[in-house]
Image (cartoon, rainbow over all chains, first blue to last red; front, side, top):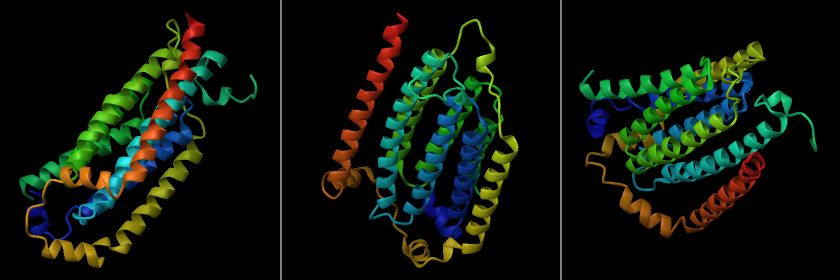
Length: 111
Length: 178
């Protein structure tokens, strides 16, 4: 199917992938900037990481032997998983200490 | 437009809609489920771009792992008798929207004006590649054990340390609660 698409139109998919990745990145940036809830901020970061992955995969489809883009995506997946785990553990601590999940409440050092 | 392009367009819209709905979500649970829709669309686009292994890994890691962690985090960080915490409120709306939409405009302008399809390796590939693309899973396994062995081991170490650290940090809270 992909080959058929590529044959009919030399570049039908790459620019759509890039536009979608730009939109995802900017949605993630807006979520990170305007939300007060710490879990929402983490969700925005995950969305931005997904946008980067989408760009890597979009360029890697023209590079079917080396697959450098796919390996970068694989390692970004690992980093994203560990980042989400550590971030949520920290959010649980912040919630139990300040009794709120608003990131603006966590503004003191040493409790 | 043939049917293959309709499939592309469907998953494109699914991802787009999930991402936009995340910005306007009223509470955290619906935000998590809009993120699920977005991740499913991204996984489908990975598979359509010829990265089958990463599409399945995306479903398993993002939807099965990270989103589940988010749901647990939402459940553990709210008071049962307080509905206000589930609502998502915004601050710095004007600044955030200006920065985000400005970056979007710049990125779209760059993408449209550069013309990536004129790059020589992309043009050569779409002109000469007529054979069906083989499955990548075999060569991913071989390359992961030869060329990429050091990043692979470092990634394994990072993941183990991060998960151990996260469980140590979170265990303090759970022990204090019980």
